[in-house]
Length: 458
Image 1 (tube, rainbow, N blue to C red):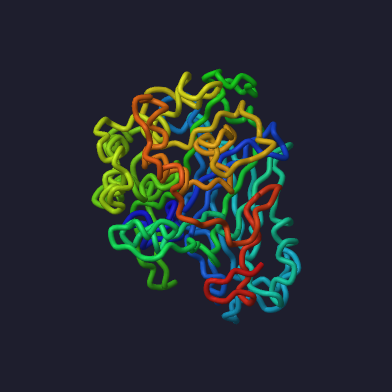
Image 2: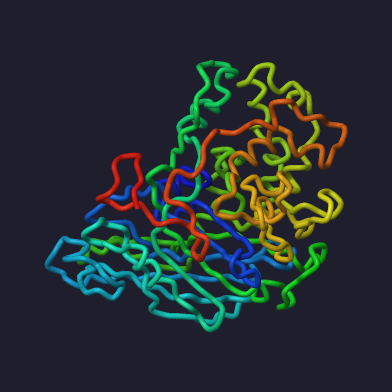
């Protein structure tokens, strides 16, 4: 849901589909920032013999905007290539894969990392090995070991990983898209039924992750590590994208499409759920191909979100104050389009300037929390969403409560949120493999042999 099938066209091209973006000060290395971009949604763990992999024909990028322009000042580019070692077999592997160099793995994938700053490119690494997918207990008997081998060090104090992980996003997809039902509160729905626990629609799903850990000074405008939370230069904006070449021709001799021409963006993602539930269906494909710096044209969907109007209709009598509120939603504009300026939350800001752009904004001077709260900033934990996003942050609950009016008093003290607002949740939590406390932080992907439909197993 975060961005798993958020637009008509990209839903037909999952290998290029951003699912989630994370950006946070690394809890175990607080002088670094970890950037994570996930792709290829709803992976079936036993989806062989042609298992999931990054697209050799897709340019994957993680972008940093540190100038207040909404434009990418720094980009990290990832290009992949797969090989077939044994052309006489249909098998993904011809025996147990005990290392990422094991010849029994028949389709290894390699990638390069390039840093682009203000138009100047520098290749940081070539021929880095990605790990295989988690096939099962015989094919990948020690998957955690394979994943560790695929964590590469670039220079000093920089790490990169690209490969399959458990999907860390959680949401009750089946319920939410059934006329906005929240199972814990469906007794109050326009079409009521008994209250129930939420069901994680991502249970059992894997994704493909690109994770990068770099010193904070690599990302800031002046190349320094800020210590003052109120310093404007302590804030960076982050988004990820996938691009394809502009034309495709079928090569009859090889039976595959061959891409030509310059790269064109086909997918992007900054804040979770932005294109998913804020942008109308008719504009979703357009949003995906445009840069964040042009998001002013979508601002009206933020300041008057459709979901805020639907909640009082779907839950009659539950949100009277929200129904009566007719002012533009300045709170949502700050959270999603500009960052939160000084004076709104005491001792905090992640404002990037007046340019309206969907960016995940991170104040890198905020240290990791000693007692993290998955509700992040609205629960008093300034190290969490919407100050960046950690892998365990409950962004669905945070954004549902914000849309329902919980954050309006930050900019309009005259507004009183409805009593139900602070209790809204879809009732889910992560039911896939546990998050890691070290890079790349997302858990071990569900194994094909071990899994049953809807039941993940490492």
